[in-house]
Length: 265
Image (tube, rainbow, N blue to C red):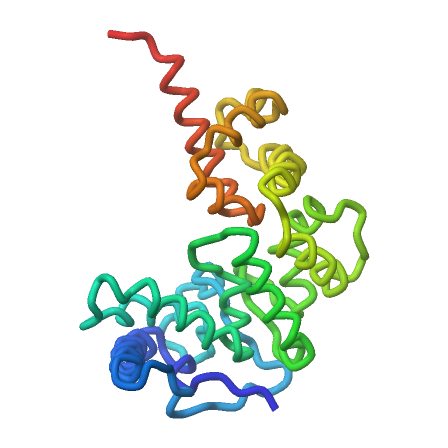
């Protein structure tokens, strides 16, 4: 039986209120005990029930009660209230570890992973998803407007490009491809991460019509130079080859190239 925190079911307004309450409650519990307890109330997710995983799938229907799992991230904005600044990073790490031991937490961290997006961090998140794969196959998932996914289809949409970057020509089944990828990702060196990025980036550039310097951004020499120049913390954030974090870095390089072409006034 699959159960999610009950407060994730409802209207958007109600869930946002409860996210604030739950975040503050979890923060108090952590400060008092050093651990995060299970949610106070759980609700069963029926087979075939739709879980909204992205705001883009809402279709402006915010007043209709439904599973709005994408709003789980709102908890984090209230989690550090009353927590000393030097304690926040440790608390955030502890909260992620707690979440990854639950099906709902593993799902959220695989579908909409918060920073950091390092290879080691993402491998750990995807391993957690694989651990709960069987039970998470029961619902259906809404990520884009008008489309309902199986778990396999959702991971295909979100992760296949990354999986191909790490394990080119891998298994057709996403679950098997994920399992193979996380093994490589978890122990990858910076050089191995860079090679995965060099395989992924041309695919992203090809599909991004907003980039003004796509030819330059496809050039392996340019990319190697830019990737080597990234400081460790910035490289870590793209080292998993998670496509949205990589797309953000490409946009930043594209803006730099555009600025470099402007005449000096």
